[in-house]
Image (cartoon, rainbow, N blue to C red; front, side, top):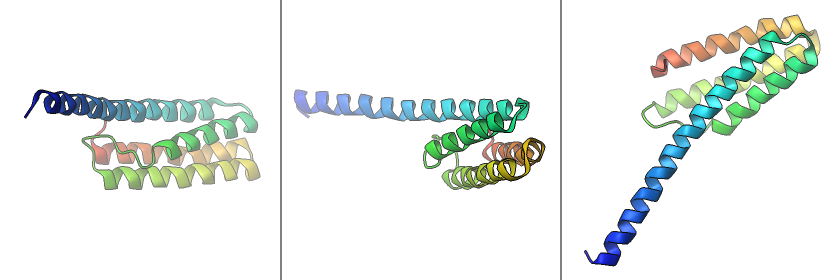
Length: 124
């Protein structure tokens, strides 16, 4: 391999590995944001704030739905994220129709789903 081929190969490898690491960091950041939105929603004292937090949760799930982090089963990850997406929409709808307490009760299922899929994926 000539000098230029080696330089190009090295550059490509470094850029590609950086992109993979950045992808994992963005998923990790999104997971932290989901957890924050979920906890905030459960603490909210009015239905408008609750719905905003659940909608933020939903938006974050959407943003990483098809971005399974390295080292985890893609099928399990996608199944869990899809269920969270559906459930977050249902929670928002429940809160809109039936109020804050009904929304909070429905939101508990989100926590249960997160724990279930973290366990399946072996996440701490």
